[in-house]
Image 1 (cartoon, one colour):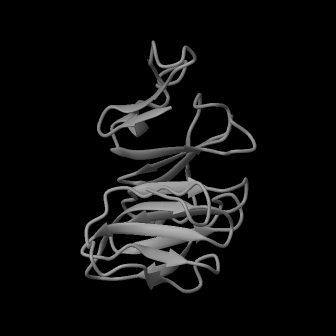
Image 2 (tube, one colour):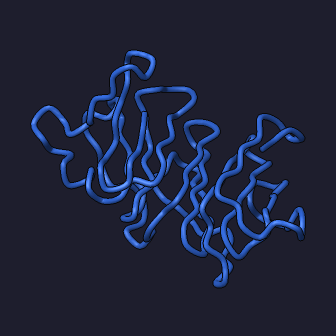
Amino acid sequence: YLGISSKGIYKSNSGGAVWLPLYGRYGQNRELMIKGITQVAVDPADTNIVYAASNDGMYVSNDGGENWTHQGNQEQGALSSVHFVDAKHGWASGGERILHTRNGGLSWSEQYRDDSALFTTIHAVDTNIVWAGGYQTFPLKSNDGGITWAATTRYVNATQDIFFINEHKGW
């Protein structure tokens, strides 16, 4: 899957040689496609479940991108990043907030807020270890599923993306 701001979501079944837009068989997804997709995440247990963070909140597809529905709280606002570790537990970031779901995105709760930050990225290693970053904030780490957050360094205050393959190794 490929998310392009103001262009939509594309899917490849050819190893990236061909990308097809997911407008839907009858064009039902055209409105979503212009909302400003910021990141796409696939459920690690079921690849038919796809999440899309957008300038209009979170969307989900349960059929591999054929149909999309707005998910969770209507007041989510613009989201920059989304990451799920399993079918139930996911995190999203956007603006000054970090959100969390424990029910597959049906509802989202705010876990962290910093009014001077602009969060652009979130990545969870598992249901406990979660990393977040952005502009005007130091990289943050939670060891308890997002209940508490702490800066990991004071040398970087602008993070575009963050990714960890385990508790200790990341980029």
